[in-house]
Structure formats: C-alpha cells, structure tokens
Length: 322
Image: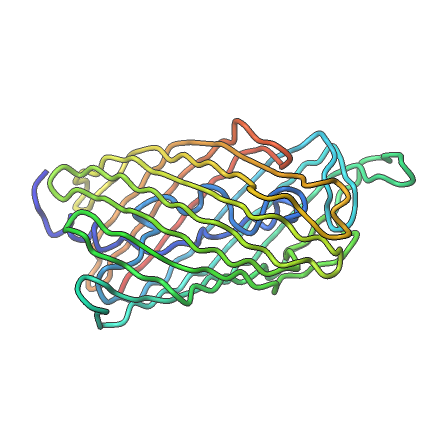
C-alpha cells in the first residue's frame, strides 16, 4: 500500500473511545453480572489515544438486545426470565495538548456523557414465588465516564502503546426495587493498557486492549461486585476508497469476573460472570478541510455467557478530529 497522506490520517486517528465507551447501562446492574464496561466497546484503532495534538468530538450510538432465563439480582430484587432492550447516545470529548512527556510520550484527557433509554422485562420473586412478567423502562442521564490520565507511547511509525485510567461516576438515576435504571449507583475505576498497530505500507491493523474494573459498594443494596477483567482485539485490512481509507475486519472480546461479589446484599453467592463474543467491523476515514472525519460500525454477538444477559450489540461511532 502506498504511503499517502490519508494513511497518516489513519494512524493519527487512533483516538479514544468511549468507550463506546459507552456503556450499556441497560445490561442490568453490576449485581446482574455486568459492570460499567460494555464488552467489545474498546477494541480498535478508533479507540486509541491520539499521538499528535488534537481536540476530538465524537458521537457514540449503541443498541443492545439480550435475555437471560435464570435468576440474577437486579437492584435488590431477584429476577428471572429477563429481556433487555437498551439504546445509548454518548458524547465523547478528548483533548491532547501540544506538548510531549519525554521521548515519544504524550498525554491526553477526556470524558463521555451518556444518555440512556432502557426497557427491562422480568419475573420478580415474592415470598419464594416468581410472579407474572412485568416490564419497566427508564431514560435519562447515565453514569458519566472521566478519563483523567491517558498516555501514549510511540514505539514506531506503525505501533503505539496506550495506558489510561477511566473513572465511572454514579450520575445516572437509580432506585432500589426498580428493574430499569439508567445508573448503577457505584463507582468504578478502570485501568487499561493497549497495543495499536496500523501498518502504513501494508494497511494491516492489529489492536488489542486489556483492562480491569474495580468497583465500590452499592450503598443502597449493600452489594459490592467483584473485580472484572476484559480483553478485546481487532484485526482489519485498510485500503484507499473514495479519497479516504476504508477498513474491513473482525472484533472479538472475552470478559471474566475474577473475584466473587461481597456485601450483605450479595445473597446469590459470588455470582461470577463471563462473556465471549465476536463480529464484523467496518470503518472509514476521510479528511474534510482541516478536520478529519471517522466512522466505525460493528456488530458483536455474544455466543457464550455465564450469569449475565446474552445478546447482540451494534456500535456506531462518528467522530471529528480538529
């Protein structure tokens, strides 16, 4: 592949996500086996930390549908035969100042503000019996994610290493005894490391992200979820198209809870969750004046889960870099 200006655009658009970041607060609560982090949301060059001075604004759109037949704890309730539908619209902003930290190191910071619409149907236990299925919904501000520390280490023209710490704040609406909540009612600290390779000559992308989530206790339910670990990877081929660069590839993820849940409200035991999934990924990068425009679309199917809702996620990210 020729070494064009557009290919440099591809490299420099290694930008921060949401991580989808956006989270699917619709996936029950942490007590239901899923945390603030949405599996597969941070997995490609789109989610990398910028290696050149930039201001980034991005819209993240996430749609999720899933179900779970067995019992899990939700907001202080015991629920079974669960179905979840959730849509999230998030605004991510990232700033990378015009200075370096030593040789080949740079710093950035940012955050994501999510707006969540969620519907949950389930049978709720009462006096040892599960009643008729009920449906509840909620919409509004979700849990804001802050990224105060984002470091990029430029190893070569094709390879960057990323280090970041994300903090999820309990800003979303939450009520004990309600199936659908836009927030989770606890804090999460999430350190993440990543290696992002995008070959300028061959157009090959190989990205891998690994992180861990450390949660505080939900004071309303006295439930503290255990530590989760997650790893995501994307393999793709990028090529010139319509004056820009297109990418076609696949994304996979593995999500595993490492330690058991605790607290007086954790009456389901340690309740460790896991998830494994994969799906296709498409991207496109194009320069428009002084800005760079990027879009990414991916569909991820969970084909093996344990103690959490199982379903399908569609991510759409549209970003401008100035």
